[in-house]
Image 1 (cartoon, chains in turn brown, green, red, cyan):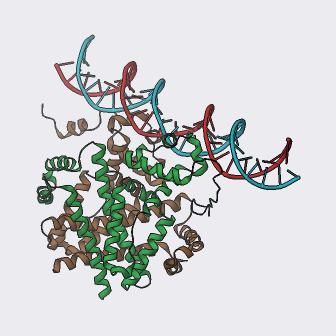
Image 2 (image 1 turned 90 degrees about the horizontal axis):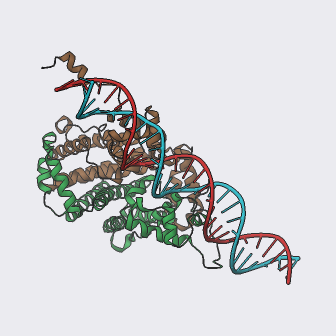
Image 3 (image 1 turned 60 degrees about the horizontal axis):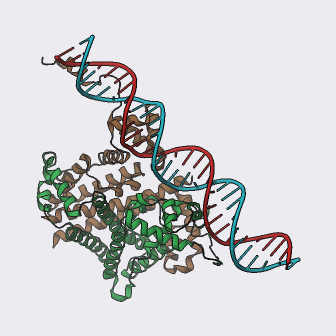
Length: 234
Length: 234
DNA sequence: ATAACCACTCGCACACTGTGCGAGTGTGTC
DNA sequence: GACACACTCGCACAGTGTGCGAGTGGTTAT
């Protein structure tokens, strides 16, 4: 017989209290945020969920698959504005910053994104919306995809390096500023081998790393967008 | 700060036939090239060198340190031209292509570069030479570093994504073209969710992936350099 | 010649990993 | 009351990185 809303909502609910893929993914993200990639093991994850280790394998094929899911989940946090809201360029700018923010919220991503291509639904839809942005900008043919790739590659490359630094500092129990100070100090001892870097080293000592990263990112993203705009004018 | 592998002095006199750090690094690179990151274990590496597993630990503090060494070794393959050879822009272009080529020669790099900051001597000297390039271009102050970062981030981001695809295809035993074909096929089945991508999918089916990656990279790198040049004009 | 020292090797053991297998358990359907 | 199905999980296996401490061969000091 046809189910009513009432019985249907009941029937749709899990028959008994049960693990779910969604739940596992969320718990995995939480662990990763707290302990990083090295801190994620199937046994610990299962324990956190009050389940037996191998129970996870009914919901997820392998640990690698789980990581794929987890990556796609983060892609879902990224905002890609509609091109006719405020023009392609500010859309792309916002997209870049949103992507960076998402990665910095989950810095372990840097350690895993490039170990597999991202083909999940959220990655797809991000790609689709990006393409809409650059088509609206006036690119045609394969240049649409190339433009999107340019921005994506720059942002991911830049923020991944930043995340690596943050992760390293955290692992050492240092603040990023302290860690940077130590590295600069150490660099000074070998500066004779790299005279061109002397000024850079001086320039950075004692600076606030967070704002330097912001500045560097803003510079780079603007550079890419400027380059794209130049292409459009030709 | 806890001393890193780079500062630990190694001044040694090979008295009898002995393992060397250099040798271990080379063997590790060979294994990585053949079997990828998953195929590198200390035991297997030692066996390849005809040594006991734990012997390696006299020359190298941990596996992570070994990977740091191995990464720096690859940075040593990268060519950064002198700015007064042919001007900054073609120098930067050449640098970008050289960096990409090095990563493609060792695609496992993508899986490891962003799991730690790179501070080895070759990375340093690469950074120094890059800085020389962009100073010669006319950048000043922190913009010199930002310009270098922009190029570096773009190139590494772009080539890492490409390497991830190549690694995945290889793992599946497919050619990159076949793998791409399968992905496109699969994408077509969910195209309804991402209508903006329809054209892109069509555009790529049956194409030669290698030349598409080349084209995309050339587009992106040129875009970044164009953006830098625009900044210089202002 | 002897002893002390050092650079280096390596077997054993520990704690921990991902995951295949197959048995078990609770729920819904006939 | 029987069957099917969705799901759980203990056990076991074949690995992993690496600390420890004993061993070994060469150089130098007495």
